[in-house]
Length: 446
Image: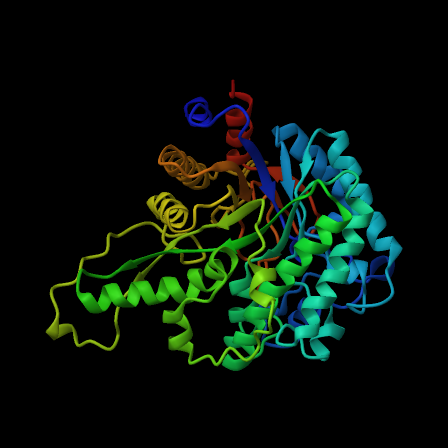
């Protein structure tokens, strides 16, 4: 099966693995790193499962060479990691921490020595706490602070790093952080969430400008997360609910990037007065991206809760599909259908699947981890990705989530997504069967 999967993709297809700084690095007090909103959030009682934090996580900060060696031995060609803003500019603006830049300099050097192309993400949710104290993403100044940070990183690493992502999952930043409070900073304010969503997109545009000024040859894009929205039935109300869900969760971030405007359906739904939009903002946000990262895990079935069941046709019975330990339905066809729809709607540039993976209750038994469920998950989703590519989607690469088990945000350490098992007490890394399958698949390419 490994050989047959690899044969579905062209020889120049990029195969990678992905992580995020706060989820794996640990060393939160090392070498001048400042406090992030996730440090504050995870240390606040009741915010994370069992009060778990990213203080140590996978100790990648001290073990990055071991982790790069694992990637090299797996045959991984590219590594998508994130850079911790608080390591670089501890207060969010002002003084630059050279020791933080030195760490990523060493990581990039190690990757290149191993023949692995670095694909850094500048922001994967760890805002410096002083910026949140000043107002956070609802404040316009945070977008400008991000541009300053992007320039600093670009000037240090740009002689060797050409492929960049600005922001990871702006929906999660705004909605989970400021509307629902499930993620840091844990606020519950719809008005702030709308302001944050605009300023995160503005930060993306300003960050692209800063990177391109520092690195003329840079390839820059953004990473957005999507689930595939489907109506519960063919009833007009369910179809309308599905389109609204797509507008609020996907078009809200894609329309500004590709069309230079927010979707009217979602603007009306939020009753947003758009007071945060200044002249020139939409031109900055819609500056052409070189590539686009898509994160996909599951689908969402939409139902119009405002319609009485008795007044509509019998709904489609949902299949008893397997789920991951996150509770997410395993639905590979959604990846294909999502990519095709987005490409039809926006004529996408080069596309990378920047996150795709599954959490399962993995255990080490006699030194091995038998996770056939994850291997099957990857096989089926890669087959769906190939179908999307054959349907015209300009798919250029795939980054499995995740290289290793890690701190799964508010859910702590109970959710294991990795190809590599991590014993958090000893930091021992153990390759799972899925990692061996991934290696075989990569080595089988022609």
